[in-house]
Length: 341
Image (cartoon, rainbow, N blue to C red):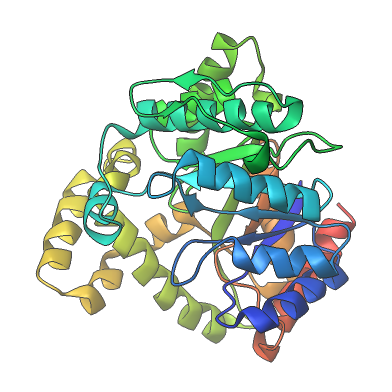
């Protein structure tokens, strides 16, 4: 099992130093996310100063970008990083696609399938210099002239990971992708009963196996040096869990555990703006299902024990920032535990 971290640099001029610190810790990979900043730009800085770690997006939002734009960015990052770049894509939800990005919405799984197929058709044209021909319901690419072709890579095309929660995207990952970003809002039961079986179904369709798809996740953890710190940390994590538990997109997880009534209650509270009250409804039982709860010196081993055989790449659901002295002990413990795994 590999250990990765996520970074959220608010200053691109610091991204390289953060990436160097990630590699110096001995971690295996670095992920960026499309939140307040572009997810690709920090990776150009990271690629310039690192030699070993994987560099990827977890995730970049697919639909607001033409596959041609994404294909070119991924090709350049693959070349710069000498094959260490991983293209992680997500679909987002309808409100963000239509209202934040002002982009058309359609059924995400069929559209993402075409998006991935388009990327591979474009990369094939880049690599071999042949004509570009892809026609689907959502995307159509029929023009590639030498002036706009960046030329071949001397290494494999970038691996594609996608993120998802429900059956359709799991099956799509199994069929077409090299990896799958498991949402942090999950339980071991959900992994075993929904995510992995559906990835296997998709893999079987393409005569592949589960081992062809790396499962990656930044997991919720509750930790501290003593009981008081752990209790304080749990309040923040309960609030995060309550937010996800209130969201209809993630209700399948709640239904599986018989918590649908709580989902509806939290959803109502969110619509009433009662955000600061919601965390109190996350019971100790729920906290233990969604998060790994352990002291700092036991946390990494507890994470590995929970996800052994389930996840291939794991990290913590809070960003890596080398200048946060209070978290340095957590990162050192993780680096030590996973480097000797």
